[in-house]
Length: 121
Image (cartoon, rainbow, N blue to C red; front, side, top):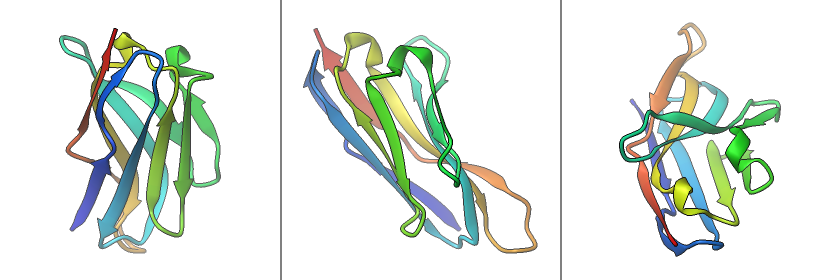
């Protein structure tokens, strides 16, 4: 069994910062990409930031220069540092990881339960 547990969400004023963390645990052989998605009220879920095991990153255009994704491959963790937050960043943020549970299994995508981020104006 694999679990992704997020932490660090909360309420912050516009212009403030939050740091989200996610830890993957359970039966894990290897983790390829790790990412953060978000879903704002009434909107579709969207990719915010993604990092491969090798360190390549990509960001959603609206967060470039404000958000930074990082990960610790040894600890199976991924973080999202969010600065200069805007009300439009409000939403539920999900940790996502592409995981192989053993050497003979194919990769599967796992999702955390989500953590709420609310940015007040």
